[in-house]
Picture 1 (cartoon, one colour):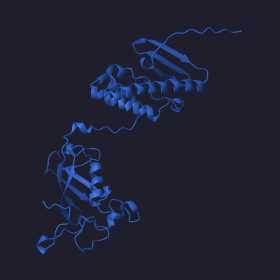
Picture 2: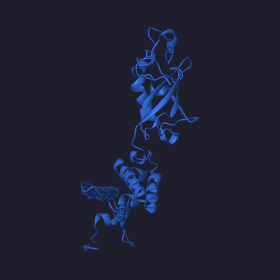
Picture 3: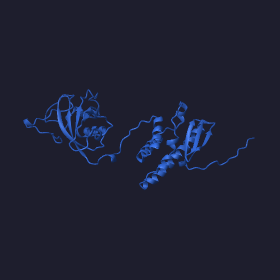
Picture 4: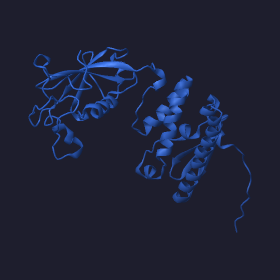
Length: 289
């Protein structure tokens, strides 16, 4: 007959520990205030180990969210001491085997938490913790989109001049943007204003072919009158078809740019520019530069 004696070996706040899955059957708990104090847990059953991991890790996330929500009500952020004690970010390790990949909880919640703490650490100037969070995200090969917040940019709107051209015609327009407007957002804006599909738009600012994820300010658009160039590909070049309902406007006259009564070839992206000498007028919404 075997007797077991239960003994309390420690009592810790969830925020004061980090819990790590070393293998599917081996977990490790460390006390943040005493890094040398580490406890190792061996499980006979992998399912039991996974259940225990799920309970502890999810409880840690919820405890941290509650603490942050209470501070959000007061308009505050977790202090750096709390950031350093974020268990998921410190304790999580990317799986090294197929078995660990199936058992380790690499769920979206954990990844989102890591991204949030990375952002807050950078804002707080905590280089050590920012590096730690970035390392954990890199171990999991998490696709990220990192952008400056709009607060980093001037708040005023910018009236940007745009020279628009396709293979057969050109016209000058203007549009309003913010310094933090990305090229991807600008493409959508021009699509809604002039029906030029994003797939046919190629933006050039300051002799640079623009990338979707960069802002207009990064290319030098910072004040009224700054200029950009928009070249429109043909629908065939952009591999768009008339059967695609989302791109059907490409084959129709554009109300803000179309000249009166002129017919265009099927794959033209822009109508001929009206000739003021012949009494033609620029359509509403088009600014002649």
